[in-house]
Image (cartoon, rainbow, N blue to C red; front, side):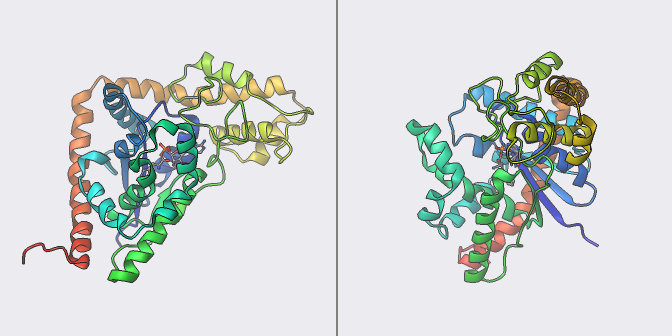
Length: 331
Ligand code: TYM
């Protein structure tokens, strides 16, 4: 039986956080045997906010090495750079014509990013969800493992797919989100009402996958907690809940098990344990990423093969789309 298709991507737009790991990449590894997987480096999405070209180039390769270091296997999965497969931009253009400006203006991420980059509210930023829909739909994707913040984009991708299928006949498979409860929404260590983000200005708010052990532990020690002293997950305790969530994701247990492990302990001891647990998981990933980055020839070969595989799959769908909408393709 043919395997179902799984698609996901991360933007090389900054240092990855532990949220990117628990919300996305960690699940990719767990799913790679069960599905036919496409994992992209979304550099076309990244340029919707201003990027330093040399840095973008460097981060692209670093992100590939990170995928592999986290356990994504290039022999089993297709790893590639989005801009190397031109069908993404081509399909996005077609999908633009069935997407409404009003829908895009209502997207939460667009509103947030517009507020943060008021000097650069460009068309690409607004079009971000359409390009993401194109990514997903090009591969006839069944499942998309992402964090909770991407749920709205996934919904609009489904709407666009349904709209196209309705208008032109069955063309795209309907993708489903794969959002695990544990780790799908890691909050800032400084403000648990905000998501942990690559681009937070407060250096203590995010734990980066590249942080060394001391930095990780220091950031967790400084994490905001809540009043009271009990270590339990609840709405009144967003800081402690976030730390429990992180612990559970990194220790491989449930939040309830984590609560039990820390029952009766103080905040200081708890935060140190979370920091150590995270640092223990990150150390081997960092070492492997460093090793891989010293072998550029290997990484380039992975990307070349990935782009070829992705191109073939994407070409099939785009050709079908062009036929359906009446683009002349010869006979
Ligand atoms: P990006 O790079 O912003 O985020 C990458 C992945 O990390 C997840 N994530 C989080 N999960 C839990 N807690 C957090 N604090 C946290 N912050 C980020 C995101 O949900 C995402 O899964 N638009 C995508 C990239 C993309 C994509 C796609 C994804 C482009 N095309 C097609 C799936 C399918 C994004 O958010 O990238």
